[in-house]
Amino acid sequence: DQQVKQNSPSLSVQEGRISILNCDYTNSMFDYFLWYKKYPAEGPTFLISISSIKDKNEDGRFTVFLNKSAKHLSLHIVPSQPGDSAVYFCAASVDNAGNMLTFGGGTRLMVKP
Amino acid sequence: DAGVIQSPRHEVTEMGQEVTLRCKPISGHNSLFWYRQTMMRGLELLIYFNNNVPIDDSGMPEDRFSAKMPNASFSTLKIQPSEPRDSAVYFCASSFRTGGSYGYTFGSGTRLTVV
Image (tube, rainbow over all chains, first blue to last red; front, side, top):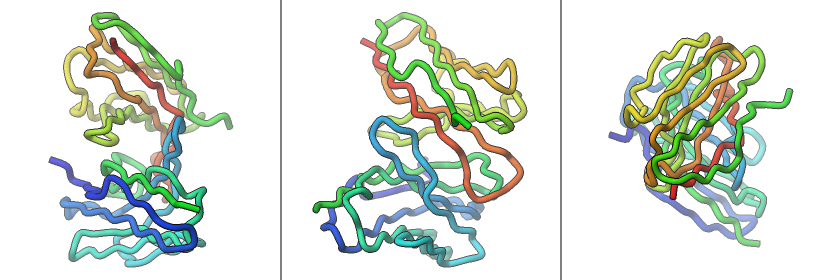
């Protein structure tokens, strides 16, 4: 049973437009959420996170939104750039100790010039 | 810091052979994780260690898989005997388990192909 789901395996966006990547979770005990970005032949790297006490966290072009009642989070990238093309993984944990992250299946984002 | 170091980067082996994947975590990190990435299942946690002790190995698919962490700077994931369905990218990650918002640091992965 997948506790963290990314239902869109891929997303294609034009450069300059907004990219919205979605993630749903089922475990109500999750209270810390992260997004990782992965380029080919590299390991995933941390992008942005949000605690369950917040509903929004912004870092430059990247914003993560959390809707606890819907058990849904999303990552917004605006404006999208070709260098953002990568696989994005959503992850969740019960605490923010970096312990036992549960990952979604990933969404491949392609930003077209 | 050189980050999390995994070796080899690529491994091609024949079915039935033993495969050993290696990982050197970031110095000072006290948690280490082995993940497997496949197209079908994304990133799956196989096992994790805290202070060199295995805490949760419920993700290890079968008895053919085993992992060890003899000291704070080295871990191995062994598959014996290997099967074609084990073909995947295997990632090692480490973290400093005292809180913070940055989760894990991943290695570059080992791409395993079993033919």
